[in-house]
Amino acid sequence: MLPASRARLASVLRASKDVVSVGIVSQTLDVDRTRAAQLLSRWRKQGWLRRVGPGLYVPIPLDLPDSEQVIPDPWVLVPTLFARCYIGGWTAAHHWELTEQLFNETLVFTTRRVVKKRVTAQGAVFVLHATSAKRLFGLKTLWRGTTKVSVSDAARTLVDMIAVPETGGGIDHVADCLQTYLGNKSADRDLLIRYAEAYGNGAIFKRLGFLAETLLHDEKLTAACRDRLTQGNTRLDPALDSPRLLTAWRLWVPERWKDRAA
Image (cartoon, rainbow, N blue to C red; front, side, top):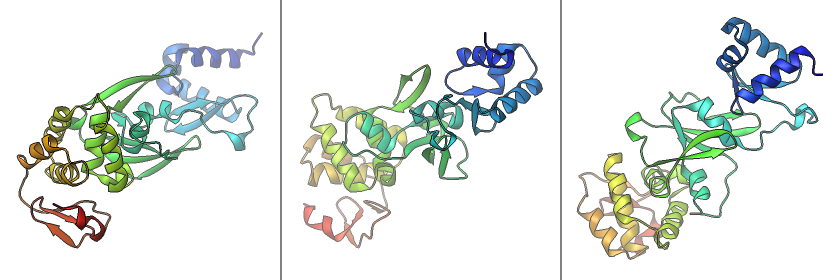
């Protein structure tokens, strides 16, 4: 028979979704929140739980030394640590097989105020980018174990990465992902355009149109972007030195991209 304290923890773990909170303990054991917090603190000191955020804990396998404690699936922490949020950028691109490149950090878009761009929890590193509630569209719900996680669908992932190239590992990698997507029979160009319009950033159509015309030779997508060009100039990738202005797309591009312009 399990000791009483361990038995209570076991009942909490059965009721939780990978991450244990004060609220779950309070509801499961029918105790007030102060008592629930005390129990969580005790279980942490006993080595049964590890704290991953304010009032948030994950169970520790009994046979795993503390120095080796790394959560096997970082996605299960995302809804609890960063909600409202979704997994996107390079992480979603790999999930949807737009790229074979695997990044060690999990990229998360969150409506919470981003104080630290990189957050480490349970041995996993999360890269955070702020977003607004009105941009929580184009998302899919996936189950990771017993945890529901939101992830941007393939088209929305591309729109995010074109809007903010650093979330896709830079414009070269974003262009590769776009090429992979459009080479698939399930590619939806109209959906890309609708998402870009809903996003509300004119830079998307400038970058997408330039890539569609010069790299992908996609006439339909090129025309759709050209019809939606806004005033002002922007950079193909804000992180790159871009001395060449392509007036047709109102886009500053690096020297190595200039010969691709029509």
